Image (tube, rainbow, N blue to C red):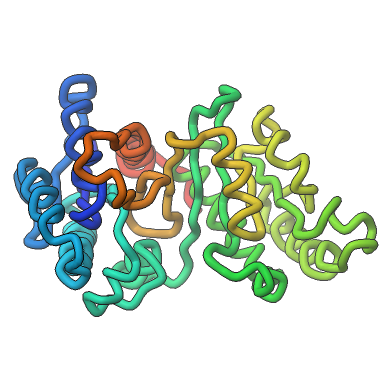
Length: 316
């Protein structure tokens, strides 16, 4: 028996319920072997909950508390089911962070909420495109996420690089089934500081991190300049890249995968994916929403869960 997946609707006023519904229609005509259930505020629900939530959401455009509560409770129900072992993957549609806060759930986003609900301290945000405009896959772990740029250098520490690269290597083994993954470590400064001309982080922060990683048996290469590391990954030299901050990773990632990328949370006891777009309130209900990223998120969640739970995996 294969893995069981849960899909949460996100903010009902956005395109989440619509792309989720379109995805289910697509999968059940082309990939009927995927066992997926909609999880709403009260737990597992029939598929028509998505249409009902979309209709109600379009009629409650300004109701942040209601929308945040629907999105938050749906996630809580799915996580509880995952922790009971009833499901192996959760696919989350996009929510609106201010609305989540308005509902009393004070988290920077879904990733942090999922981590707390699962009782996990260390998680990673991995952007995945198994197919890009150049053909080859690109997987980029964001070492830091939503920080002001001026705060990044202080946040990129030796311990952070070791922690995130370790999470990445473990996930590539357990979920992707790559026996000995290769990780490219993206530098912080231009030209990897060019021997100290443009900063000292590569020597002071990166070098000891790479020493620790290699001592642990992790195939880590770096620091590699940001202007070459992603192209090297796209030629197959690296299975994934660890980027030091959000935009250096996302700019490269979305350039080659816009609209088809998937956000994967590393470190959870279940697989979690989501599409790489937001709520898109401006097109909700117009029929213009594109479900491609959500379809990719469900397909990847299914594949990763099979590798992690249904096949012998590497002990990490």
